[in-house]
Length: 170
Image (cartoon, rainbow, N blue to C red; front, top):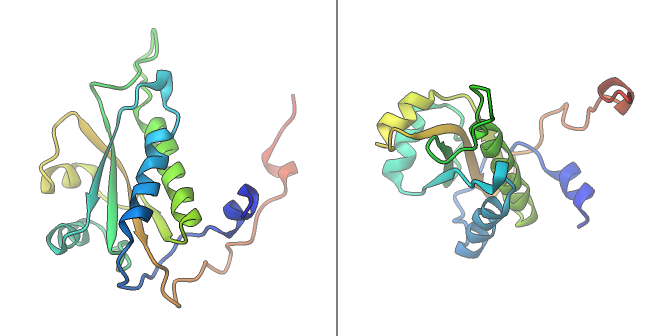
């Protein structure tokens, strides 16, 4: 499948089967995250793979959005490893995680897996419940799994504004 077809076909999956994810598929998704560009190639991402029933039960305590996925990735950045912009309080952590998560989400689609980017959770709760190091800041959760028959795209999935509404040439 060509890239634009992959991007067009990918959707936020809201229902998963209990079919396990093949280790090679998971490795391909994680490798895509490893290869993602980050500011100054700082690679501050730290990814936690939640597979055990205990870990998934803990995720269910902090978000209603797992949708039965057999794997959830907690995508964090290490605050000690991010690029700090000169003469600015801003750092690259959140944008680096966004790039990494996007790469993994598209790799999941390429592997025939469903995914859903979740930002409906409390990062401090995730850090506490999984006893993450203080400098690791959770930004996103990424559900992964095989889409169930009822895990279809939302009704408005194909609705996109024309480029003329979202792009301005200067």
